[in-house]
Image 1 (cartoon, rainbow, N blue to C red):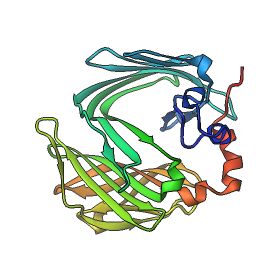
Image 2 (tube, rainbow, N blue to C red):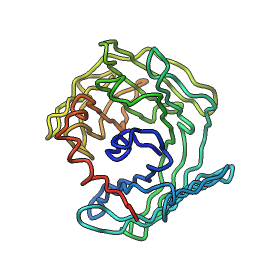
Image 3 (cartoon, rainbow, N blue to C red):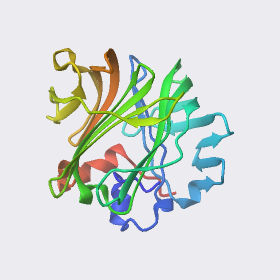
Image 4 (cartoon, helix red, strand yellow):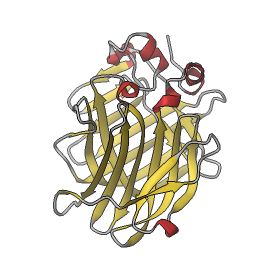
Length: 272
């Protein structure tokens, strides 16, 4: 709702987020690579305390499980993305965390540890695994506060570890290193040393933090664009080898007018 990456929301002055809504789904795998992020207006939005509907897709919370019903179409080459994802939280957090020193941007890891069941009819795939649910909000455009960030999440002994490295516009650096233990509480830990990762095809700079730099590297690049990369990274945290979901965001590149003209091809909007 009011996506920071929406060119339509930016052009409209970012004043009515409810008129710029979308559900983003990204699937990766042999024969199942699909991406959809169709933006819709407020006439396609319905919500109450337990349900959020955006066009034909919806999220519903019953107190124990978040059910995401997906019925979307990919851009450029139209293909259906239809299925259901169920997320069962193992831990719930009741407070957001500031991402900048001014407190104008917050991150809320609602369910940092969760079980996930995914069942898709199109493409015909299914799996069970671990998952994660979070929420971001800000009082200003993201690119006005930050120039870049690197984020990762990994399963570690006793829970989940999340690492944030953020660079603010004024040059200040902020690092968050947080462990979520479903049987205990949220704790900060000393961030390990930084490791520069191999750049992507679009020359996106990627860094992470690890206890074993020589054993750390990109396993697979899942998403690669001029300003954003999503990757699987082999790393070592809390003395254990693990695979982290990792993202790098370059907001200097995102602000580039050329990049802005490319966004509607990836994120179309339905005007009817």
